[in-house]
Length: 595
Image 1 (cartoon, rainbow, N blue to C red):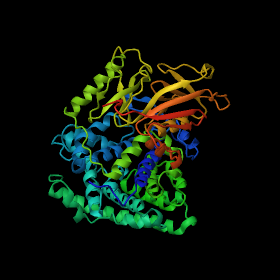
Image 2 (image 1 turned 60 degrees about the vertical axis):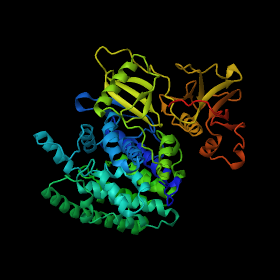
Image 3 (image 1 turned 180 degrees about the vertical axis):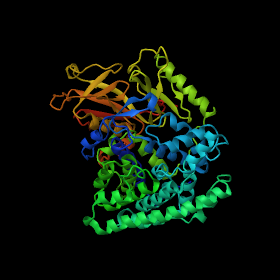
Image 4 (image 1 turned 30 degrees about the vertical axis):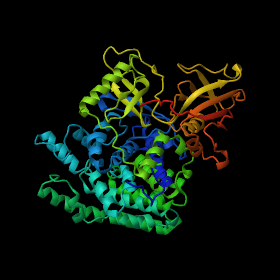
């Protein structure tokens, strides 16, 4: 399949990184996000384009534990967007990939997932669709919840379909087919459609985007129900259920048109309108409706239109709106703004959001429409999930932690880190073979082994880059560094976030910042130092080998004259602390880290 020529790779990257950055920025402020300290703690936060570390309550009510969220880590919104993107890479079998592999696997690593998607994912994991739940009282209750699921769980994940659909009709087909996998109420589906049409227009318009154009484009997503019914699978509903669905669809279209009229009126008032007042009128601060698909979609479209010329203002308004569904609102708003402006306006957020390199890669593959069926797991999903738990428990005894294993969705993984939370939960940080980072939390077994951050060997994924060696041309340069387990060298960083972002761009892989450190490779750890601490950088140089020097130059945005003309050349650059980094190209035939 040929690439999407109407959209640039930069637009695709802007959409994906914008969505992830908005999610990570708004997640701590979400009214239902579980922030320790509650609303009082949320009110203390100031709107800044900076990620922060925070602690949330996670788990079920009977087994609550404290979950430390590192700066830039994203929630279920981005997880599901990526799951959708991987499904789309399966070409014509994208829906099978979504329902047979991605959704059944997602609950294992979900963070902050909504009830509708979790229930649907559990149904798909058991081998049945959520609209075919059985005749028991429990099954009928689950079916009723599915039919009434009208939240924003579809809209937040549909950006990849915008890149794959050539026509408006194709986009409608893909969004509806995707949406019914988890939600059965028109509010979820109509919200996803109007948002998809607005996102598509923004991505295609770019420089020609006019004031309020996204609102007009969104109205194109108000599709007559007679065009929707043929897209539903056989057996999706009884005749009477279809009649109820059709009536609810027409009512939802009318409601959504009223919401679009509200935002159009506000946008036309320009600076005279108050964004917070408009968002309140839409229902964004009402806990009874602020998670609705139509409310969130129209609010995101409004903010992207209102702040089209000042995108950071739109993102901050969404991410810090009091008592709102801030992670999803900010994610959807920033995806539209990313479609309009690319990534430059995001600043450091684009570099420091979790899995930035992976997000960029999958956005570019989605733009190119690279069909890759990947590995479909052979074992049933439930069996694979149980096998994963056994693997992690085995690794907690420090046995086999460095061996690559198979994730239930068919990807390979290595265990990058193990720790315990509240002395009750075993947390494994996994680095998957394609570059994504996931966290698996599970109750510790009885008589557990002694844990901590015992497994420190970082996951080394299938990519073209990695730290080769670190050269120390004067031992005094590192004499005062605090040693770290299994790290040959620890280098001080004045700004750990900026340094980690630099090395992430350089190597093309995500480098998470955790507990004041960032692991660049098996032998190199960066460590945050106070700003006034002197750092001797003149006597230290870092040597790195990569697959292609040209890729490094492209990621760093180097001028053409600085790009090496021969694979034998060495590229010399400075890291944020002034150390010399010498980058050379790996010789042909040298194996990669993970197959």
